[in-house]
Length: 216
Image 1 (cartoon, one colour):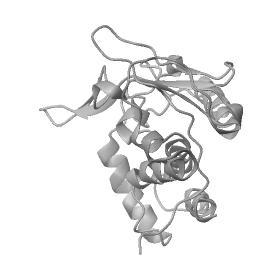
Image 2: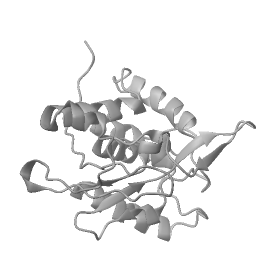
Image 3: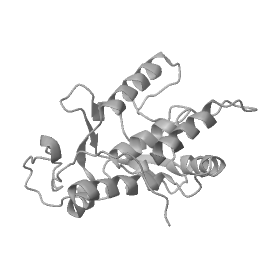
Image 4: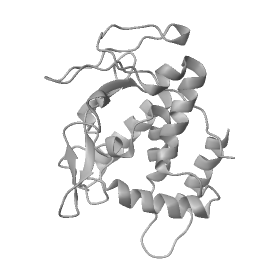
Protein backbone atom coordinates (compact mmCIF):
# COMPACT_ATOMS: atom_id res chain seq x y z
CA UNK A 1 0.00 0.00 0.00
CA UNK A 2 1.24 3.47 -0.84
CA UNK A 3 0.60 4.81 2.64
CA UNK A 4 2.81 2.13 4.18
CA UNK A 5 5.64 3.21 1.90
CA UNK A 6 5.19 6.85 2.94
CA UNK A 7 5.04 5.85 6.61
CA UNK A 8 8.26 3.84 6.43
CA UNK A 9 10.03 6.74 4.75
CA UNK A 10 8.73 9.13 7.41
CA UNK A 11 10.11 6.94 10.18
CA UNK A 12 13.42 6.64 8.33
CA UNK A 13 13.61 10.46 8.11
CA UNK A 14 12.71 10.83 11.79
CA UNK A 15 15.39 8.41 12.96
CA UNK A 16 18.16 9.44 10.56
CA UNK A 17 21.16 11.28 12.09
CA UNK A 18 20.80 15.05 11.83
CA UNK A 19 22.91 18.05 12.75
CA UNK A 20 21.62 20.34 15.46
CA UNK A 21 18.40 19.53 17.32
CA UNK A 22 17.01 15.98 17.13
CA UNK A 23 14.34 15.53 14.48
CA UNK A 24 10.72 15.30 15.53
CA UNK A 25 9.37 11.78 16.03
CA UNK A 26 5.77 12.93 15.69
CA UNK A 27 5.05 13.01 11.96
CA UNK A 28 4.28 9.33 11.41
CA UNK A 29 1.96 9.22 14.42
CA UNK A 30 0.21 12.39 13.29
CA UNK A 31 -0.33 10.92 9.82
CA UNK A 32 -1.49 7.59 11.32
CA UNK A 33 -4.18 9.37 13.32
CA UNK A 34 -5.28 11.57 10.43
CA UNK A 35 -5.64 8.78 7.89
CA UNK A 36 -7.29 6.40 10.37
CA UNK A 37 -9.92 8.88 11.52
CA UNK A 38 -10.27 11.52 8.80
CA UNK A 39 -10.18 14.37 11.33
CA UNK A 40 -8.86 17.82 10.43
CA UNK A 41 -5.37 18.78 11.64
CA UNK A 42 -6.84 21.50 13.87
CA UNK A 43 -9.21 18.97 15.44
CA UNK A 44 -6.32 16.60 16.06
CA UNK A 45 -4.19 19.18 17.86
CA UNK A 46 -7.15 20.21 20.05
CA UNK A 47 -7.66 16.67 21.36
CA UNK A 48 -7.17 16.04 25.07
CA UNK A 49 -6.70 12.67 26.70
CA UNK A 50 -10.17 12.83 28.22
CA UNK A 51 -11.55 12.94 24.65
CA UNK A 52 -10.51 9.34 24.00
CA UNK A 53 -11.85 6.19 25.60
CA UNK A 54 -9.39 3.43 24.81
CA UNK A 55 -11.18 0.90 27.02
CA UNK A 56 -14.60 1.30 25.39
CA UNK A 57 -15.99 -1.33 23.04
CA UNK A 58 -15.28 -0.11 20.47
CA UNK A 59 -12.64 2.47 21.47
CA UNK A 60 -13.70 6.03 20.60
CA UNK A 61 -12.45 9.56 20.16
CA UNK A 62 -14.72 12.56 20.74
CA UNK A 63 -14.17 15.42 18.29
CA UNK A 64 -15.46 18.58 19.96
CA UNK A 65 -12.94 21.38 19.40
CA UNK A 66 -10.33 22.73 16.99
CA UNK A 67 -7.24 24.93 17.01
CA UNK A 68 -7.62 28.42 15.53
CA UNK A 69 -5.29 31.38 15.03
CA UNK A 70 -5.71 34.47 17.18
CA UNK A 71 -5.58 38.08 16.02
CA UNK A 72 -2.23 38.36 17.78
CA UNK A 73 -0.79 35.64 15.55
CA UNK A 74 -0.81 32.83 18.09
CA UNK A 75 -3.09 29.81 18.39
CA UNK A 76 -5.76 28.73 20.84
CA UNK A 77 -8.32 25.96 21.23
CA UNK A 78 -11.84 26.86 20.11
CA UNK A 79 -14.46 24.91 22.06
CA UNK A 80 -16.24 23.65 18.95
CA UNK A 81 -15.10 22.28 15.57
CA UNK A 82 -15.24 24.06 12.22
CA UNK A 83 -18.99 23.47 11.82
CA UNK A 84 -21.91 22.63 14.09
CA UNK A 85 -22.02 19.17 12.53
CA UNK A 86 -18.39 18.54 13.41
CA UNK A 87 -19.09 17.43 16.97
CA UNK A 88 -18.89 13.65 16.72
CA UNK A 89 -17.61 10.39 18.15
CA UNK A 90 -15.43 8.20 15.94
CA UNK A 91 -14.30 4.66 16.57
CA UNK A 92 -10.57 4.10 16.31
CA UNK A 93 -8.78 0.99 15.02
CA UNK A 94 -6.78 -1.35 17.23
CA UNK A 95 -3.37 -0.27 15.96
CA UNK A 96 -4.15 3.34 16.86
CA UNK A 97 -5.36 2.32 20.32
CA UNK A 98 -2.01 0.66 21.03
CA UNK A 99 -0.15 3.63 19.61
CA UNK A 100 -2.09 6.01 21.85
CA UNK A 101 -1.40 3.85 24.90
CA UNK A 102 2.32 4.05 24.15
CA UNK A 103 2.07 7.80 23.61
CA UNK A 104 0.30 8.25 26.94
CA UNK A 105 3.02 6.23 28.66
CA UNK A 106 5.78 8.32 27.06
CA UNK A 107 4.09 11.55 28.10
CA UNK A 108 3.71 10.32 31.66
CA UNK A 109 7.39 9.50 31.82
CA UNK A 110 8.43 12.75 30.16
CA UNK A 111 9.33 15.88 32.10
CA UNK A 112 7.80 18.12 29.45
CA UNK A 113 4.82 20.02 30.91
CA UNK A 114 1.41 19.37 29.40
CA UNK A 115 -0.95 21.45 31.47
CA UNK A 116 -3.77 21.18 28.89
CA UNK A 117 -3.55 17.38 28.83
CA UNK A 118 -3.16 17.41 25.04
CA UNK A 119 -2.59 14.24 23.05
CA UNK A 120 -0.41 16.07 20.50
CA UNK A 121 1.08 19.10 22.29
CA UNK A 122 3.92 21.21 20.94
CA UNK A 123 7.49 20.44 21.98
CA UNK A 124 7.05 22.91 24.85
CA UNK A 125 3.74 21.43 26.00
CA UNK A 126 1.52 24.14 24.56
CA UNK A 127 -1.12 24.09 21.80
CA UNK A 128 0.39 22.85 18.55
CA UNK A 129 0.19 25.19 15.54
CA UNK A 130 -1.13 23.24 12.54
CA UNK A 131 0.45 25.77 10.19
CA UNK A 132 3.92 25.16 11.63
CA UNK A 133 3.44 21.41 11.47
CA UNK A 134 2.21 21.77 7.89
CA UNK A 135 5.35 23.68 6.91
CA UNK A 136 7.57 20.99 8.38
CA UNK A 137 5.43 18.31 6.75
CA UNK A 138 5.83 19.87 3.30
CA UNK A 139 9.60 20.01 3.73
CA UNK A 140 9.81 16.38 4.81
CA UNK A 141 7.29 15.12 2.25
CA UNK A 142 9.29 16.76 -0.51
CA UNK A 143 12.52 15.16 0.72
CA UNK A 144 11.05 11.64 0.76
CA UNK A 145 9.35 11.86 -2.64
CA UNK A 146 5.79 12.63 -1.54
CA UNK A 147 5.62 16.34 -2.30
CA UNK A 148 1.99 15.99 -3.42
CA UNK A 149 0.88 14.84 0.06
CA UNK A 150 -0.23 17.44 2.63
CA UNK A 151 -1.89 16.94 5.99
CA UNK A 152 -5.25 17.53 4.30
CA UNK A 153 -4.57 14.68 1.88
CA UNK A 154 -5.24 12.18 4.65
CA UNK A 155 -8.75 13.50 5.26
CA UNK A 156 -9.50 13.22 1.55
CA UNK A 157 -8.05 9.70 1.45
CA UNK A 158 -10.22 8.67 4.39
CA UNK A 159 -13.37 10.06 2.73
CA UNK A 160 -12.50 8.30 -0.53
CA UNK A 161 -12.15 5.00 1.29
CA UNK A 162 -15.51 5.44 3.05
CA UNK A 163 -17.19 6.36 -0.23
CA UNK A 164 -15.91 3.20 -1.87
CA UNK A 165 -17.04 0.91 0.94
CA UNK A 166 -20.13 2.64 2.36
CA UNK A 167 -21.25 5.11 -0.30
CA UNK A 168 -20.90 8.80 -1.04
CA UNK A 169 -23.49 9.84 1.55
CA UNK A 170 -21.48 8.26 4.36
CA UNK A 171 -18.29 9.93 3.16
CA UNK A 172 -19.99 13.31 3.07
CA UNK A 173 -21.12 12.87 6.67
CA UNK A 174 -24.73 12.35 7.80
CA UNK A 175 -26.60 15.51 8.66
CA UNK A 176 -29.81 14.31 10.29
CA UNK A 177 -30.32 14.50 14.03
CA UNK A 178 -32.14 11.24 14.52
CA UNK A 179 -29.43 10.00 16.84
CA UNK A 180 -30.16 6.31 16.27
CA UNK A 181 -27.40 3.73 15.97
CA UNK A 182 -27.10 1.93 12.66
CA UNK A 183 -25.24 -1.09 11.40
CA UNK A 184 -22.14 -0.71 9.30
CA UNK A 185 -20.63 -3.32 6.96
CA UNK A 186 -19.57 -6.39 8.93
CA UNK A 187 -22.15 -5.85 11.67
CA UNK A 188 -20.32 -2.95 13.33
CA UNK A 189 -22.35 -0.19 14.96
CA UNK A 190 -21.96 3.54 14.87
CA UNK A 191 -22.16 5.31 18.19
CA UNK A 192 -24.56 8.13 18.85
CA UNK A 193 -22.83 11.48 19.13
CA UNK A 194 -23.17 13.60 22.23
CA UNK A 195 -25.34 16.66 21.74
CA UNK A 196 -24.34 20.05 23.03
CA UNK A 197 -27.05 22.56 23.95
CA UNK A 198 -28.22 24.33 20.83
CA UNK A 199 -26.13 22.15 18.51
CA UNK A 200 -27.84 19.46 16.39
CA UNK A 201 -26.44 15.99 16.95
CA UNK A 202 -24.50 14.41 14.11
CA UNK A 203 -24.15 10.70 13.54
CA UNK A 204 -20.53 9.62 13.80
CA UNK A 205 -18.97 6.93 11.69
CA UNK A 206 -16.32 4.27 11.95
CA UNK A 207 -13.40 5.21 9.80
CA UNK A 208 -10.97 2.79 8.17
CA UNK A 209 -8.52 3.34 5.39
CA UNK A 210 -5.52 1.50 4.00
CA UNK A 211 -3.90 3.86 1.55
CA UNK A 212 -4.32 6.71 -0.89
CA UNK A 213 -3.61 7.48 -4.49
CA UNK A 214 -1.44 10.08 -6.12
CA UNK A 215 -3.44 12.56 -8.23
CA UNK A 216 -3.09 11.94 -11.96
